[in-house]
Amino acid sequence: SFSEKPIIVTLDQLNKFDDKAVVDHESLAKVLKISPKRLIWENAKVVGTGKLSKALTIKIPATASATASILSAGGSLS
Image (cartoon, rainbow, N blue to C red; front, top):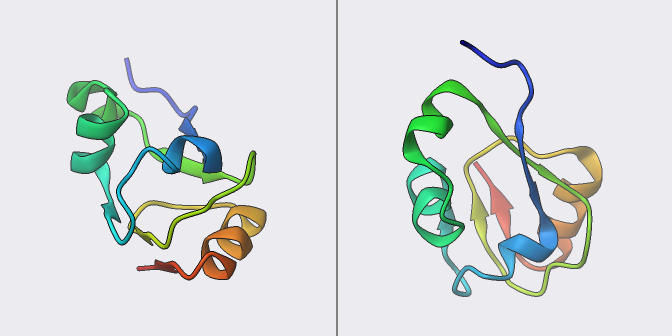
């Protein structure tokens, strides 16, 4: 059944990506071992929990606090 609850991705989890990496559904599945099937039915969302130390290009929704952290780490959102 379709779920309205997003898959939560924290800033700490984003540190598992290589610097300058693009974070999208495909790379989330690969790096964080999230089921690609689950990503079809549930949206992922970045939340501002933890500290981001890498400049990443984020292609999934992010909360306001996560967005601020992503930008201050030198990353971008698209």
